[in-house]
Structure formats: C-alpha cells, structure tokens
Length: 243
Picture 1 (spheres, rainbow, N blue to C red):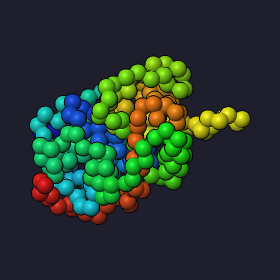
Picture 2 (picture 1 turned 45 degrees about the vertical axis):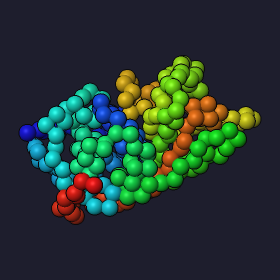
Picture 3 (picture 1 turned 90 degrees about the vertical axis):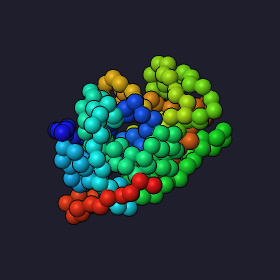
C-alpha cells in the first residue's frame, strides 16, 4: 500500500526516474507549464494499489507498481501524480516503455501526436518563433536531440556556463525570451531536463538556447495540442488493455 500526499504544483515537481521515459516526462512537464495543475488533474482516482489516469482518448485503470518509489516522481524522490502517469503508460505499452519519440508522449497524454519542426540551419529562427507562439497560445512544447551523436557540452546563452547536452533525449520547453532591441538575435528558449537536479525555479534551473544553438545541438522542436478540459470528477474510468 502506498500513500500519495504529494501534489505537483510546478513543473519542477516532475522528475524522470531510472527508466528512459523522457519522451513522456518532458511532455508532462510541458503540460504543467501550459496548465497549472495539469499532472494532478489527470489522476481521476487513486487508492493504495490502483489509479485511474485520464490520458489520451480514454481513462486508464492501472496497478501501482510496488517499487513506485524508484520510478518517476518528484525531485526529492517522493511519489506523486507523475509516478501514476508513468504506471498508466506501462499498463498501455507493457514492456515497451523506453525509447519512444515525443510524438508518443503527446499522443498518450493529449490524444494527438502534435507536429515536429527541426531546427535546421537557416530555419532555426522560424522554428524558435513557432515554439514561442505555441507557448503563448497555450500549447506544450518539447525539444529532442538526435540519437546518432554523442553527448556534448554547450555554452548556455543566458549565463555562459557550460552545460551537458544529452544525445537521444527530450527536454521540456518551459519558456522563451524576446530578442533584444537592435539585435539580430531572435531570442531563445528555456528548457528543463527531466533528470536535472538542483534549484527548482525555471530561470535558474533551465537551459537557455538561442536559435543558432538549437541548430548546433541538432534539436527538433515538437509542438503538442492544447490540453483538453479535465474529465476529473465526471468519469469513473475504464480499463485499457495493453497494446
């Protein structure tokens, strides 16, 4: 039996666990940025052993894994709604829980795969502007690196510190900055690594990348759909069979 006293009150409360579920956790963080309380409202009902999670087109009833404390949750290791959402994903996907693209995360959480915009040379500024517009209009955004290159370091545009960019990984886009007057810079995107630890405020604990750095990092931006109205309190849920 597990107790779930912790709520997700900000995107920093969502942490990826040891499983390779960045494809799910990054869109989940992005959803929390878009709609405050997004993660908690997906949990229609929970007990010590079962949870009904409102994902995609229909609620999923899932068994809560006995080792839930070792899964996704808060940054201090507390079990929360992110834990239950990951458990619901395992109910649907079975053992095929790792290695998916953000399309799968958006499809699972929002019922639609969204669109992808690669930050290719010459098009990165347009991709950045599209991401900023999506954020301003209430749509979740994530950014993914290619699996074919090795992890590397890159200077943060905001403070110049060197940060490690992980290959084959998904980051949640949690904000954007405007271009400076008289500058040809198109601003930048603030991103949160789902496995990053440290301070919890977005401005400090986020990677800030310009359009050129998005290209250098070979990132693809994924823009998801607007979250649908919550069904919490209006549905008893139904069981989804593993696919």
